[in-house]
Image (cartoon, rainbow, N blue to C red; front, side):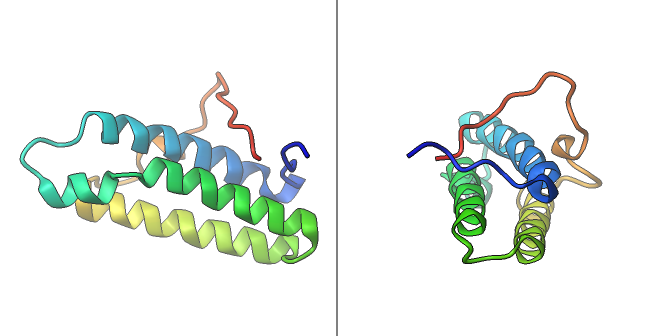
Length: 110
């Protein structure tokens, strides 16, 4: 069975999660020096984002979660990760993932 497509109401959040995942992966591959808590917080976080998004999209596709619940769940999850970026990496203001890119990198949702 192929990937579940994201319903239209989820598309902007899924795209945002893709950008956030790419940002987290970049930081995970080049973690902040001399910041063990930040390094631990980053470890596996990009993969977690991908799995969480896949799970929410699959739950909608199976009818376990309605679209409004999925939007709320995914939005809350992304807000929590943004708070984590502020705490663990000292990011003030919106991180780069909050600005849509023109070139798209699409993750396959399994």
